[in-house]
Image (cartoon, rainbow, N blue to C red):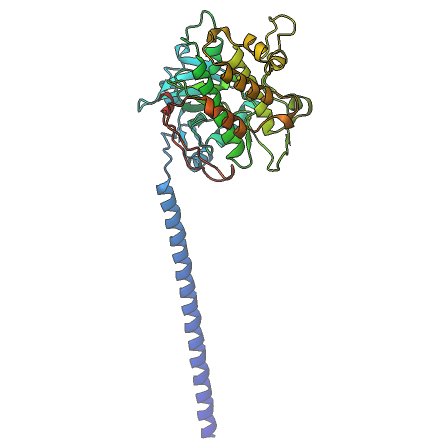
Length: 405
């Protein structure tokens, strides 16, 4: 009996020790799990804080009405976020004396930021879906694209009632106002000589080449025209106004179907008829601008004699005829050009405005054809390449001329 009691006592002691060991093991595992979870939390938190501290975006006094979502977008895109009050001050209360242009989006004002930097500020004066879409497209595209031949977006303001875009300042305004000075205008314009026109043609072509060839998927400007080619203090050109831009097809020779938008006289015929948009649609628009540089005529002019109202229809038969091409040249050029150069540029223009899109050249080919004709005084700037338009950010290429800033 005594042996049985000893056996029972030993059995229960053994059970107690096993239970105690199990409890200790479980408690140790729980503590270890908590430590691992806490360490992982600290690691993630430190990584997020480090990433935020390294962000090079300058958020400028964003407390008045800018939403937290806007600020997060701006931090990702590397743009300044301005308050309406700051931009109101920069433009002298949006004074009429500071208006430097008008467009479908609204008015553009000359401004000076608190650090003394000159800027151009575009104020959206029409509410509605189209205006909202144009605003978003400009911010989305120009925050990612980097080329010395595209107008740089510095920042923006977006609150419940105001939409503004802030660009680098281009001292000589748009190409259009120099080709067709408005009588009685306060804007001082200079006649563009032949050499300057060739350089503008080349730099504008490089802007489109970047959009078509250096970005994937390609970007189609869709509203390329002389008023959207801006000139800095040294008359170097940059392509501007991306409110109507569309991402093109990734497939070679592919198209995107979209609503027909653009400016009369610049819209490619196949796009106008079918709504099928390709990079060749931009090439046609570029050809029209090249004709403007050659002839000094607007794309559509109802005041012209019959048969001369549409620039492309009038000029195309004359572009490949040595004797007739001289007759279409802008009288303001006063014979500054050489016939060899004129014939070459006229041939490029003729190819660009071909009715059949397949017969038009790539913008890369246009650039290569123009390069030998242009006397460059500006140091070569490497154009940044963006492998994907959907990537977070493209490398920046600095513009040596700093565009009038």
